[in-house]
Image (cartoon, rainbow, N blue to C red; front, side):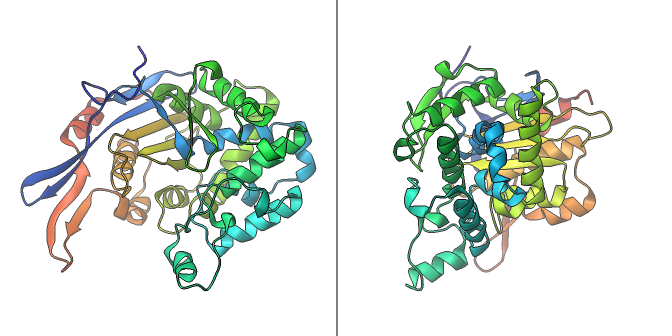
Length: 362
């Protein structure tokens, strides 16, 4: 049975705890599901059939319609350009440089983007703008790469670029169809909404989203054309993790630390996706998709990393060096403004016990 965002009963379970002294002061509830590329659920807490918006976690799937189109070969997309089209980037100069090169290649400019404008996530860059040293620009919008890719697809389809975000535009219809095939969930059954960047956003069961990420990482059952596009996406994200997010961002740092073992992509309102590559756990191990949804939206992004790190610890995927690089995202002490230890953030007792009971066939 599909559930749609009901926050009662077993839809969400305790995943992350914050302590003060000996007391658990705060709890983040959520759902998590791990699937292979055939859709088999290997692990779950909460409701694997929860229908919720992927938000920006969908970006690596949304660019698939462009990259599998044979006509896209004319653009000779580089790995940095593919990574930026999958990104929720921090708006640094490095991100903007790649975007400008991509847009020049596509024959578009920032004036064509309909994503809107916001202060860049990167604090240094944002401070330049706040001090009046630079004008706000849609190029620094975190979704500008995705929108550039959508405009490229509109061009290939001879679809109206002025309405490339309209749901009935051929651009969006093809993206939805392609994503539906990856989800093994018909696009006509998507719950639709409008994202913060004004693009159509869809909600599907979490198990289907996890399946799609596993399939993206191990597309052996797909057509050669689609499989090649999947390989381009995962390779670009792992080769250029900084472009997918930015400094001090979990998805960038975990891809950098694990070096070719996984892809990772955050989404707004508590969503996060990980795709583990085949053979990453041990020779012959399958690709796996992990989807996490934190019910309160996880605005400070403190809960999702702890959940993901707990799962990766269980897999044995993280070496001691990787653990050291990612310590800030794992279970760790919390200090106050005087740097006095006051508690810790940690996986919930329920998550620890559920993982301990889980045996995955590798």
